[in-house]
Amino acid sequence: MPGASRRRLALRAGFQASALSLILSGAGWFALRSAGIDVRLPVFVWITAGATLTAGMLTRFYVQFAVSRRIARVVRVLDVYARERSLQRLPDLGGDEIGEIGRAVNALLANLTSLEVQMIEQDQELRSTREELALKRALGEKTAELEQRLRERALLFDIVRASASERELDSVLAEIATRLGEALKLRECMLFLVDAKTQRLTLRAAHGFEKPGELLERIVLFDEQPLGKAAKTGEIVVVDDLEALSESSLWEPIEQRGSMAILPVIHRGTTTGVLAVTRSETSAFSELETGLLAAISDQLGLAIRHTQLFDELRRGSQHDDLTGLGNRRLLRIRLEDELHRAQRFGEAVSVLAIDIDYFKALNDRHGHPTGDAALRKLAGLMTRNLRRIDTIARIGGEEFVVLLPRTNAAIATKVGEKLRSMVESTAFPGGEEQPEGALTVSVGVASLHSDETGADLLARADNALYEAKDRGRNCVVTASQPTAGSARSLTRSRI
Image 1 (cartoon, rainbow, N blue to C red):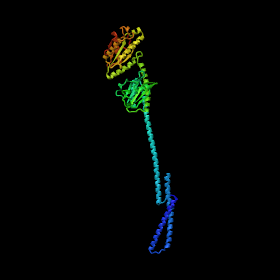
Image 2: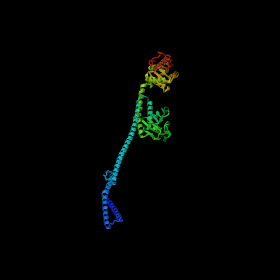
Image 3: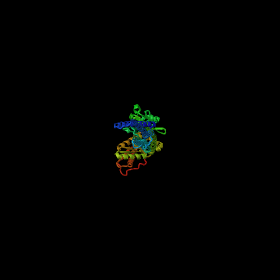
Image 4: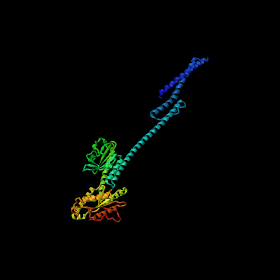
C-alpha cells in the first residue's frame, strides 16, 4: 500500500477516534449533570478536548504503524505473485483478523503453487502422451510400410522361385498370374506373350475370370487399345476409368468398369510380353503400386526368358534333332504320367510301334540325306494327323512309337491303319524305288491291361510290329492278351 494511502487511512481513523471521544465526553457531561454533579463546563471542555486529541493521535499512530503496515505487506506479497509468479510467504502478522488474513493468504499462495505444479506435471504428461502417440502412430505407419515391403519382396521372390523351377512356361505363368492376383487383390490378372512379327499378343495365363481356361491362346492385335499400345510402345499404360473407353478399344473379356494397369514385359530392350491387371475401383493404381508392378514386370521378363531357355534345353534333351519329335526320354516321362492317370481314373492307354519298311535299302540306294528327308516328312505327316495330347517319339533310326492317351485297342488300331494308309499314298523322297513302289510302314498296336507295366506295354506293341513284318510288312497288327515270356527287346534292328 502506498505511503499516502496509509497516511490518509491513519488520519481518517484518528478523526473518527477523536469524534467518538468527543461524543462520549459530551454524553458523560450530560450524564453527570443529570446526576446532579456540578462539573464546570470550561474545565470539562479542556479535559474533553485533551482526551479527544489524545485518542485521535493514538488511534492514528496505531492504525498507521500497527494495521496499515501489515495490510501493506499482504498487498505487496499478492502484487508480487500476480506480476512475477514469485512465491513469498508472509510472516506471522499476529493473532487478530489481519493475522488470519495473512495466514489465509499464505494458504492460498501454497494452494496456487501446488496447482501450478500439478498443471506443469499434467502439461508434461500430456506432452509426453502426445509424443508417445505420435511415435506409436509413426511406428504403426512404418510397420505397415515394412510389412508391405516384405509382401512385395515375398511376391518378387515367388516369381523368381517359379521362374527357376523346372516346369513348362504355361505352368510358370499360370502360377505367377494366380500369385499376383491373390497377393495384390486384383480383380483380373492377365499375362500375354508378344509376337512382334505378327503384331499380336497371345494370352498364356489368366486369373480372376469365371472360366480362364477358355480364354487361353486368345489373340489380341497390336492395334487394339490400350493393350496393344503397351506392347507397341513399351510404355506403362494406366486407365483410371474403364467406362470412359469405347467398347471397341477394350479387349472383350475384360469387364468395362473400374481401372486397369498395363505394363510391358521387357527383356534386354525387347518387349516379350504384357502384364495387364484390373481392379473394380476407379483410379485404384497409385504411383507406388505402379512402381511395384513395374518391378514385377521386369522380373517377369527374366522369368519368361529363363523358362524359355529351360524349355529349349529340355526340348533338346527330350526331342530328336532331325525330326523334332520326342525321344526315348520324353516317351518314358509321358508314358509314366499316362500310366499313373490310367491307374487313378481307369482310362485306356494304347501305343503304336511303327517301323519304315526297307529303310536300309532306301539309305543304301539314295544316301543318308534322302533318308533324313523321308524321316522328316514322315514326322510331319504324323504330327499333322494326330492329336495334341498324343506323343510321337523317334526311338531309333527308322523306328517310332506313338503314345495314345484315353484310347482303347479298337480305336488305336484304326489310328494305326489311318497312318499306314496315308504313308502309302504319300510321295516320299526315294519312295518310288522302294520294293513296293512306295514308302510304307508296318504298325504294331497294344492297349494297356491291368497290372501291366510300361515296359510290358511297349514290348507287346513291339511283338505285334514283328508279326506285321512277318506278314509281309505294310500292315497293322494288334497285340493279343499278354503272356509270360512273350516280350522282345524294343532295340532290335529291323530291315
